[in-house]
Length: 128
Image 1 (cartoon, rainbow, N blue to C red):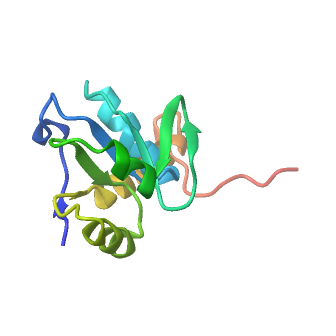
Image 2 (cartoon, rainbow, N blue to C red; image 1 turned 30 degrees about the horizontal axis):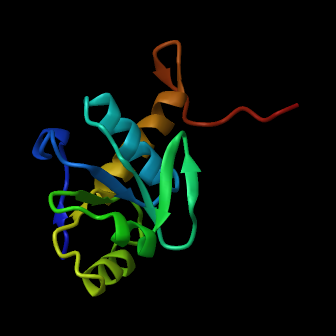
């Protein structure tokens, strides 16, 4: 099982950091890492390639060709079990599980969007 990841200072500042998962959770994790002063080298995704917010997104097979010793891989998706199995099958056994942090960051963002005049709006007004 991947080791839980909860704070940016746990990562080596010299590590090339890749976040596995390019959805909302992975993107929230990347924003947190960048906001904490860490560089993020890119995303890893099971099926897609391209870029997200200016960062490269590699399929796992592409990342494996680029991997260097010392790279840090953080799982930023809710599909932790499936991703971890793929990583281990590919020889990566030191991935960190950032999925809980990613979920918390997303929830924090959602709650912040509900604050109006210093109060949390519990219902969303109907459009009309």
